[in-house]
Each structure stands twice: as structure tokens, then as C-alpha cells.
Image: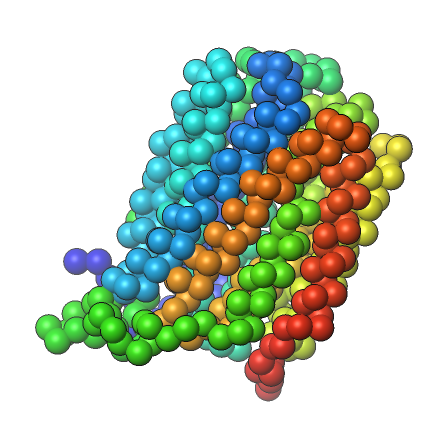
Length: 419
């Protein structure tokens, strides 16, 4: 029988067991994904000779069309009282999809693999985030999400560094990616993805939530249909926050456009990978401190600072003309992610009751994912019609609007004061 964690239990490096091992799962998964998927836009552009608007379409569809699964899987994890099995299924689907990129010879095949990978992410993300929230106390919510995002991003640092080394050894520099280098990355990147699924299966435990007790005494039983906590509507703050997130995301197109912008400024493939190493290193270093700050000072101010940095970064990417500009701007982009990403998820957990967290994270991730489809399409056409700087000017403007709306329209609860 699957073991169900009832209390705090043993802690690992000061974090609950589940938070630590879910962080390790994300570390391994992101190591794999960054090795493989970071260079998919260059594989499409340099090897398959696909146009920029099509790349925007593929990235938008990959993120957007799978987003409804995040709502369904989050709701289902609330309904059945189980998070872990859905997370295992989602990670497993993505892991099985990745090796098929080795055989891809058309943009349709790449789009298919990318879609299946995102379907896996759609299945796993909301239950996993809800499991992190269920496994953390209220006064450690920001800290726990900060650690989780930091581990995720540390995996990206390792994966991108390994990818840069592999590409350099295979093709000895050059501005364009080769098929041989990409195929080796796919094979090597599949290994940590498989390890992540094993860690999740054997080291993460289902978390008992308040009221999860059936008449037969088993933990984690399904809530009864029509129970008040299952039918209660989300409050206005949560709905406003989702609406503002959509505005923000419409200007936050796929990171594929960061890669294309770097190549447009004559960065080689290994240099582009090292840019993302810098981005993820800053992200990893700032994520936990930002979570701790949000626990003590409140989430809202931390998120607003992060979004302001994003707006300035995208403005800078529009105006960049020298290599050193790009290095600094990628570091600033990592600072935005480190400050805002984990804290935003903790903010979602704050806004809803524990028994609705799976559904809430589903709506949050779906809102972001569905907005990415038009965001990437808009960015692709702006690049094609106006120029490379246009998507970044648009993103800076949308982020500024979202930040002002968030600052004036959304209230937060009082922070938990620590001794």
C-alpha cells in the first residue's frame, strides 16, 4: 500500500521530506529538459530551416493546448485526495516522449514530441505544486516553494553546462546548431529524466490533508460529492490575480525568443547555452532568499519587484546592441525569475483553502499556459513584421501594466510573523 505522510515527519536539510525529494525530482527533470528543449528553437531554425512564426506557433501550442490538463489534474487531485500518482504519470509521459526527438526530421514531428512533453507537464504540475503546499507549514510556504524552484533551476544550470560542453566538443563552436550535436543531447538528457521518475516513485509520499479520512479508516480517501469545501467558489482576490497573470503572460512569450535574440546578436550555440547557465545560476541563488523574504514581509511587494525587473530586462533586450548587454540582461532575467516564480506559487497557496489547492494551481497554470499561445504568436509576428526588438518592447509594456494592476487591485493576507 502507498504510504501516506501524516505529520511533519523526518526533515531533510531543514525541509520536510516531501519538499526535499520533490525538489530533487525537479532538479533531475530540469537538467534533462534544459539539455534537450533549450536548443529546440535552434534545431528548428538551423537544421530544419523553419521560419520564426512557425517556431512561435510550435512553442505556443506546446504550452497552451496542454494547459487545460493542469486544471483537470489539479481538480482530480483534490477530488480523489491523491496527488502523487498523477505526478508520477505526468513525469513518466514526458520522460517517454523526449527520446523521440532523436528521430525528428520535420517540424511536425518536433511539434508532436513537444506537445506530448507538455501534456506530461500538464498532468503533473498542479498536483505536484499542491503536494509541495500540503507538505509545508503556513509559515514556511514561501521558503518551501523557494527551495523547490531553486532546485529546479540548479538542475538547469547543470544541464545547460553539460549541453554547452557537448555541443562544443561535437561541433567546435559555430553559430548554427548541427543535427549530430542535438541528437547526442537528446540521448544524454533522457537519463536524468528517468532517474527523476524513480525518485518520485520511491521517495515521495502521499500527504494526508485535513479531513482526508474515509469510513474504512484509510487515509487520502476521496471527498464526498457536494461537500462545502469542494463546491465553494474562489474569492475575488484569486480571480483578479489570475486575470492580471494573463495580462503579464501575454507579454511573456516563450524563452525561444531569448535564444533567437541572442543568435541575432551573433552569439554562438555554446555561448547561448552559457547565457542560460548565467540566467539559471542567478535564478537558483535568489529563489530561496526571495521565498524567505516573502514569508516575513509578505508576497505582494516581492512579486511587484520581480515584475518590475522583468519589464526593465525586456526593455533592455529590445535596445541591446553589444554582447556585454546580453550577459547582464540574462542575469537580470534570472533575478526576475528567482524573485517572482516561487513566491507567486506561494501566493496562490495563500489565496485558497488547502482542500482546493490542486484546482487553484490548475487554474493558475492553465491561465499562464493558455496565454502563452497568443503571446508566442504575437511575438513571432512582431519579430517577422517589425523586427527583433518588437516582441521585447511589447513584453515590457504588458509587464508594466500587470504590475500596476497587481499593486492597486489585489490584496494579500497578513504575513505570518516568525519568532
